[in-house]
Length: 217
Picture (cartoon, rainbow, N blue to C red):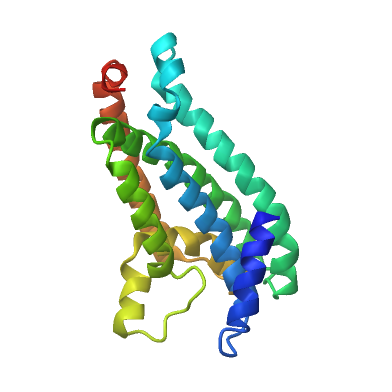
């Protein structure tokens, strides 16, 4: 219901996006992925502070809390997906073979979320003010990321934000097959590279701070 109310309000206010085709599906798919990204960022910076009691009272590895958080976010996103499907179909979602690429795209998001959780969770444990910074930056990113707006053209600030914002590409690997019936190969290359770097960095940080994090809480 939260997803439907949010997307419905955006579509009501923005209308058809100035006559743009598939605008309803564009917003619906963009918001679906954005809610996953937003939950991952906002929950990760408070992860270990939120689990302080368990971390201090048990000897469970901190990776367990990261994976549990990812599962919670995935379940919430699944509920949003149930609301998104009828909106996408109503908005003219393209039923093409490219739509099958949405499945591995979702897998990329799910596999990247734990890495983000580890990196932000550890950083916030050492720098508590990071929680407030990330919350505020995330709000700003929603408007800097093409969730509900389209680039005016190849150039200009909108074009730059569209192409150089990494979050754009995580959205496009899910959204482009839905609204255009094609696979965003360029976005795939970018997202896989970023996710691989984040995963390596997370493993390094996890190995270094796994036993030390309890003393920072």
